[in-house]
Length: 385
Image (tube, rainbow, N blue to C red; front, side, top):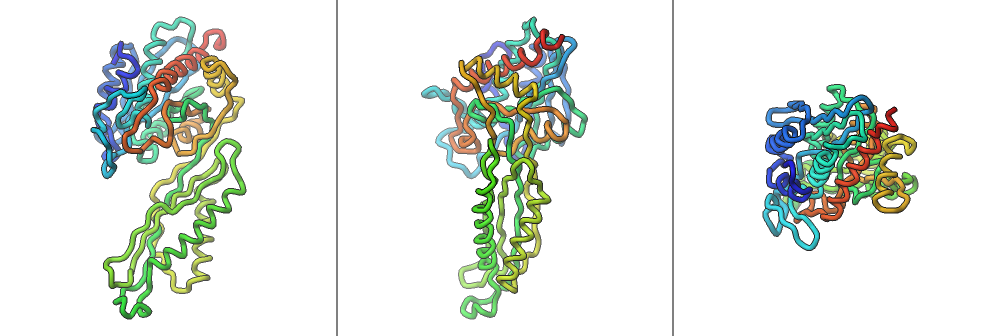
């Protein structure tokens, strides 16, 4: 990996399968171990599950603060998607680099590695730079959660995610629940003798869509309004039978200040309204699918100021903080580890998890320069003295 351009680094990462599921990232870990040996990093491997490790590379430049580069090795599983090329065979075309994970988030990882390589002979910094390449981000942040449980600490962190090169200081949390509606099966020629679980689920969907409209009234200054959507529904067994079961999956995106307990109460209220409207509604169970929390970092924190200054120097203009509308590992670092954290990386979020994934090569190269500048600024000997 050492000596390769940032594009070449990314291409090597893409060629190594590391999809979630199943979540095995050992191939990427092997590349990072090779890079660590070439750049003199201290290495720690944290086994979260068999074949699924966090890989931590530490570069010690002397006394001072600790800066964390955090991003994930696992990528979205493309099964069921229609790609026009092999997801694991990267190529460049029209200023873009195509391949699975190029945007989310192997592009960020490649850019971080390029920045670390550029910093290896830097004499103006002091402190520690720690790369935490984690597993399981696509499964709810399992790797960074494990990192937090092991007591990881730093003075500032940047999480590599596709932000289109914007400094993001806030992100949404994820509250996904699957509701199981229970009815009574009967021949559809005598439909009134059955209880239609799909009809009851449809009543719930109508009420949940009303919640989405209500959320528009209280936007976050950087993230905009919270979200409430029904994203999956399935039910019934055959064309001439009243369905006895139906499952509905809700996806509620939480703003900083909102909690899963608040979303629980919100959901219970909607269910009670439905039961008042339809007396024989039976919700057999509510299953937790994904639960992550939102977080935000104060704009006065040193990592935010250093990031805005670094990007401003690259772009030649004043930069402002933005919001990241998806969930990510910032919450684990920010809330569980107590580390002021930002989110930054190449690629557009709308391209993450999409077929024919790509990243803009100029963005990829700019991200590498940004990570390098950020480290120089945050770990500056002058600031540390």
